[in-house]
Amino acid sequence: MRLFSRRYKIALIVIALAITTTFFILNEQQIKQKDSAHIINIAGEQRMLSQRLALLVQLSYKTQSQKNSQKLKQVAERLLENQGFLLKKVSSKDASAQAELSKHFQDTRLLKRLEQYTGLAIENSQSYSPETLQQFEQFDNEQLLIDLDHTVKLFEKATLAQQLTLQRINLALWAISLLVILFLVFAIFKPTQRWLSDTYQRLLLEKKSC
Image (tube, rainbow, N blue to C red; front, side):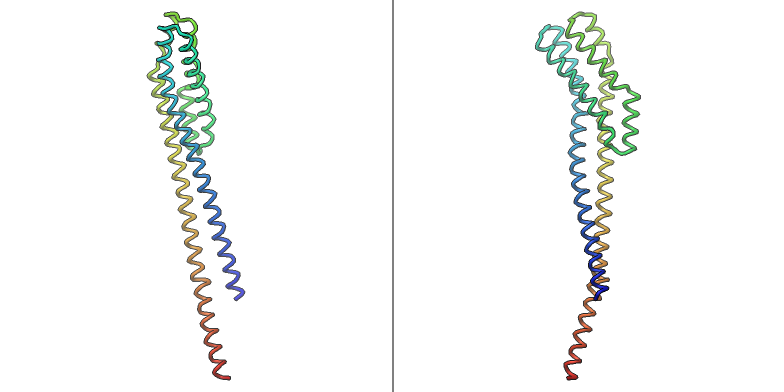
């Protein structure tokens, strides 16, 4: 019985560890999913902000309104703030995604181009001159949108890879828990059942002999 008791304790400890590990992994998965959704939303917002900035440049030039100029400045600041946020979040992804995102940001010089783009927009809102408007319109806004769109796709790809990894870990933990249950059945419960049956038969024989 001491052997059975020791096996039983070991099995219970393994089950407890598996359940605890599963809980923490599921909790981490939930946190990462929320964070990933926020990152993708910010990356998607960049496309909208770049288009809105172009519209505000035109409105600011036509109306020469201080209100539109203020909105333009806020949008420009938001664009740069978002890009800084996205750059920081690269490190939260796995090694493969980090390499891909870093290469994308480096090859496209996205931050530098956004700084140039927002700088031209703000300059236009301050001078209202045809020359500054022309400089802004000559900026390759279409390519900027393409690169911003690709940023979204890369973060979506990285999120999917994270989810697949966590799913595999959860599957492995489920398999371990199942093996432990099978161990309990064959290594503890069945031998215990036989021991109880043998003990019962022995007691019956002892009673008859008396």
